Length: 168
Image 1 (cartoon, rainbow, N blue to C red):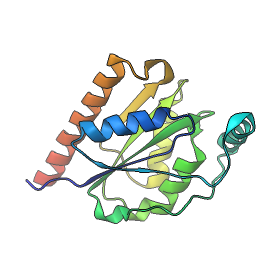
Image 2: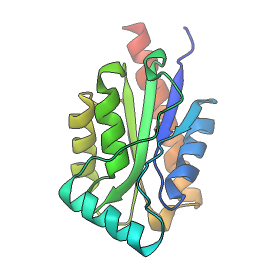
Image 3: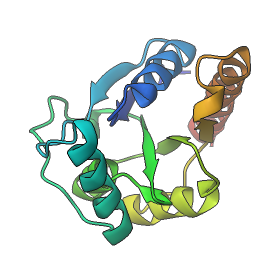
Image 4: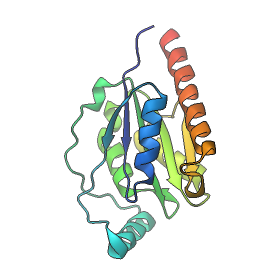
């Protein structure tokens, strides 16, 4: 069976999604990792309120130029924070820009609330793809053995799904 080329793409404002993305990359077997870089200043209280407003209005943003050609990957794992019950503007913008280049996707979220299913459905709509696996990590779970177990299970789900897709 050929090796699956995997890319983990994430946005982070606080660093939480970065730590999850890096652990996912290790768990799936050394995936490439790329951070989505927003050109809007989201630091501090002013940046928090900008993010809140963008989440409420489902605004797009302007992203810095990405470094990788996502069309060369068999699977792209995309994730980031939930903003006011919606995908973060940088993740939504990135998915819209690359939707036609994605072969298969998986999604992960970091959040403090309960909008998981709504946000995952929004990511699927924007990407035009049903995910092969999904992961949701709440802020209180970050860095715990439970989060590591969830990430391991997510990676196993991805391997099963991609193995089945390769065999089909």
